[in-house]
Image 1: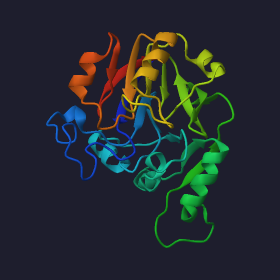
Image 2 (image 1 turned 120 degrees about the vertical axis):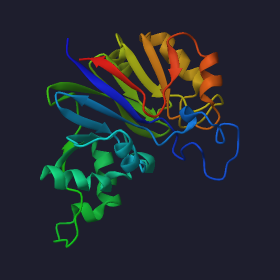
Image 3 (image 1 turned 180 degrees about the vertical axis):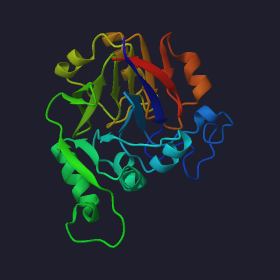
Length: 257
């Protein structure tokens, strides 16, 4: 059976870990697993590279993972920690001599057009700008031979998207998952999902809530992401049940597609 390689580009929350100005045990930790850039993943399959979200750390993440081509970007939602790296696709435009397809819901597209007005301005620019081709996500879609199924969720009051691809799914930044979306998440080998911290948060799933969702959906393996500095990698993993672990920057595994 065909497979793709999934790489966790970033596993941290919006402020990253270490957090600026903080000297807690996790921010000062010598464990490299506790160095978390903003949340994103890379999917490599059929000679293609697809990134879900371009974080403010995208340039660093791409250099770290030696990404030498970019074939598409999918967006979960429009918050700054998920979109602000869009400008860093320019080297791929130049190297590949073409546009990069971008897939997003309509509300996310509107935010991208506001935030990056210079990208979508039709006026001639004397400097390079990202070259993108916008595609609206309004249901499942095929990309380079792989079916992506959007998984709607709520991030506080804001609608967001997760994605299922083959036997894996990615669902960052959510506080609630409707029953209709849970039906899309059965039979997973790997489930990467938001688990911000131990205490409740109005916009994010915490560890207890994410464990409850894992118990309900029963993936073979679950990986927590969008992790803040409340969770130390080693200490938190020691408390988690078998089959559930914290993701970390640079984590790689194969996904059946």
